[in-house]
Image (cartoon, rainbow, N blue to C red; front, side, top):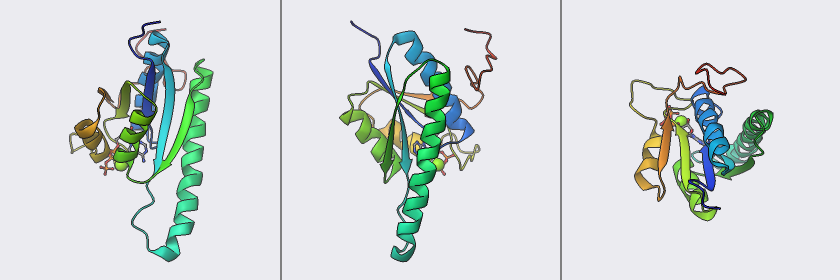
Length: 156
Ligand SMILES: Nc1ncnc2c1ncn2[C@@H]1O[C@H](COP(=O)(O)OP(=O)(O)OP(=O)(O)O)[C@@H](O)[C@H]1O
Ligand SMILES: [Mg+2]
């Protein structure tokens, strides 16, 4: 079957900005019948060695929780998404995963946990856009379609 999208990658850092991205990704996956993979990257670099193992464990545990929550949210909406936990520089790992999994679209929030909305875009989103081999969709924060059961745009 010739689909507009066959495999969508949505990136989450667990922020409400990411939640908007996930909502849009679910909507697009439903509309196109595409597979959906949710990626989280544990950003573990930059710690001295004595702290590194602890931080790594903590970041990975937090990442697993974030992914599980998002996977459940998808499942409630009838979408069985895969999850992927990576480690390293988020923008590189997101783009690497998109290549490896043959994703034809990447979806991100405009901002993330740092949430410095005075900047036009967060640095992860900016960098993914800069190097992605496939189209990138950036979802604005107030996009609440399918957000935790609320259908504010009156669809569905
Ligand atoms: N660690 C991560 N794993 C997966 N996706 C991420 C990660 N960090 C950011 N993203 C994705 O990128 C989007 C934008 O986040 P980004 O980190 O660029 O903005 P920010 O946190 O506001 O600013 P910055 O991190 O540059 O200080 C998020 O909504 C999410 O989709
Ligand atoms: Mg960030």
